[in-house]
Length: 384
Image: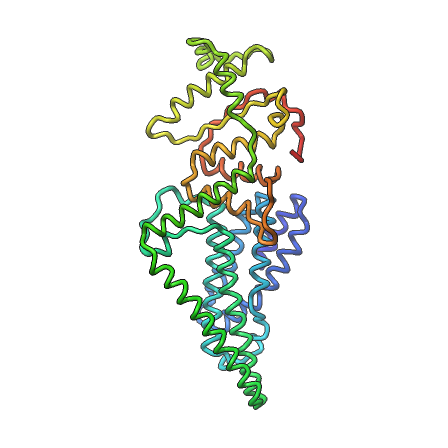
């Protein structure tokens, strides 16, 4: 708890004091759950410490990115709202906690760590070497929002079973035959529904071959790729490059690759920039390349190419286009676009774009060529 407050205080120093209260409320909501975990496994208190540590870890990962931190807090708040009322369980004697309740708590604990893992994958890169799939479920990739909704559904089901089980215990204590029958019926119906959903999922997976699973995953990816492209909405960044290349005479501008002198504005620097990009492009396609090439031309005569936000959109679109099979990168775009309270933002904002640029510049080695930096209309523009 103290460690979480430290993370919140760091955010407050950066001008985001509202996060302190939200993290405090988040930890207050989780405290009863971990109290029940402590009761269940008194011989292994490290399980609670491990969960608190994992929560602190993902908060720290996101703390340097204001937009992502906001999304993470919202995601955790939504998850916690669907968790059972563990204060009711804390009031029970240890021998009153049924096997059903214990099983549900174990499931929620596992789902919580699955969520932590999903979020950690956004801020870390596991490398491009993926382990060999063992079962179809591991091959099948789904967007973050789908995976999150699946976790929430499981947690809601556990909450229902725990509430029904506590109602059954209270009815038995009161020797209320009618209430006992109602609680038993509700438990049976909820377990039947869980089994039905589990069987349906198992049947769907059983029908899939490896090839079909990969095709379904690829379909998800293609749909997400199209959504990301619309969300980024980049300007036609390649037009200025082609224009600069068309103005270059064969065999000219080669000196720029070894000379550090620059001319005055309007003296052909865009043509020189095109030459540099051309040379780097040739190296880019060589085997063993370990860097990414991105470029942007600030163009005064093109309104949509004169602001920072246009540059961010273009840079991200280039990285996306060349690495569309990179799961680590796709997860970052996916999480940034996700809005669990609405249908999503139709177009990326400056904070989201800048946060993504920071994240991807950590994941990739980027060579960035910018032309016309003295031309942007609004270097301090925050609205795009």
